[in-house]
Length: 227
Image 1 (cartoon, rainbow, N blue to C red):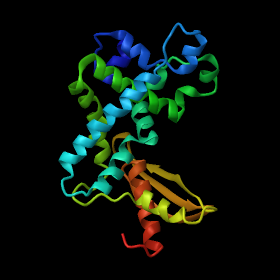
Image 2: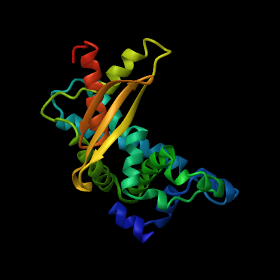
Image 3: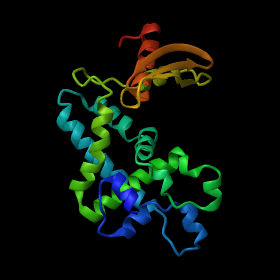
């Protein structure tokens, strides 16, 4: 527990809360009711995360309209983002998983890692209150927001592109990482966005998320959309 607490930068008064946050339902089921899973904590953590992130972007993006605030929040609390936060904390190494789940790669599964992040947040909130919970979340959120140009109005190009593509149900888009260069502390990522198997845009950025946004932006521009 000491190692994961060091990663979290939070020391629990009630260690059982942390253990509960790391307990996947597959492990709890194997214990036949003797152990509770982290699902209830995940439920609470989702709400705590939403209020912390909503409050921060409300205070710091004062010119952003409600619709774009919602899109920005969604990009910060989605499964893809939360699982990356968990990976930075090495949460997968400490998860209590059922034998089958662990053998099939559960410790690296996006959905499990994202849920664990929310459960850990809830555990911190219950153990120490909103202030340490906010401090924990903002370590990641502030860094994530640095991927965007905070001087400009935020535009979720990926969502805009998806809305256009969805007009034709048979079409689908995928984002493919095609390049990664530079040292760990200053990497540059290159991503292609593909419509079916055809590349329709390429973007680069200091994070995969930023590169994906830039690829979607280029695709929209090439499609003649006003962005």
